View 1: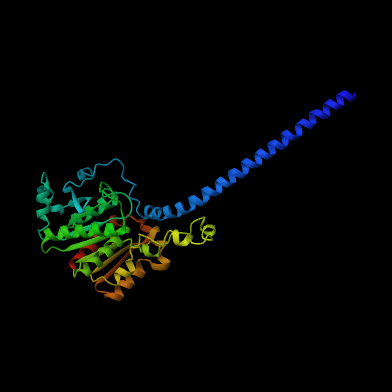
View 2 (view 1 turned 30 degrees about the vertical axis):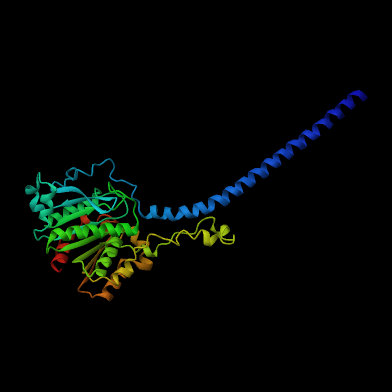
Length: 353
């Protein structure tokens, strides 16, 4: 009995150090893992804060979303635009813009088989020329953009629909300054060929900011646009990126705010429509769908009607018009082109210029 008892005690004595050894190893691994995780966090947080500034760009410019899918932008006839040509303009070195030019519907037969030189020559036929500056997703082939081109063409107007840099098959990456440069280049290109014809901007969503930015650039050059239509007006200057999830902790470290400013401190997306309207001198037409979700969210601060009032205070009610479309019509953000009243509204606006 004593021998068996001694053996059992001896075995237990050998097991205790092994358990302790396993515990010590586990604790050591846990400490190493915790230290590694802390280092990763301290390295990743500034990186994420920097990336967040670029992420904000992509949240605004959803140019990588190519809708409709699998389309050939070289063949606008695929979208029933049988009096339209595809061309490319160089807005600055290294930047090629894809542009559709649709001539007035009355010229559709004559347009068959014609080259780019013929299309350019028609810009001087006295018909008004519209430059349509689209929103922040998709390409010039989007359904509602094709719908606007057909509407304006049916009214007897020329329509140019460019894709900003980075959008569609245009080269480059979008920035606010870049988009403004693109719109300004298309305008100057048109004016060199259109003689005394009216040139009107139609901006939609993000394009309203690009339109007003470009109009102000022209005012600085002593040029007043013949007219500007703002559909689904947004004022991105009022939109801020939320606080970063780690900022409450990270800013406690001395000097970090200097080395890594807040993501919105260098906001490249301003498009200060409200400020621009105070400087513009062009006749304006605001088009607004009451059920537009993008505008309902911003209406409490600076919605389309508030921007309209800013424009009226700068000019007067004769030069600034506002047309609202009831929510029950279901036009939301992209569907105003379907309204049967719109051709008359556009025509009256052009006649007033």
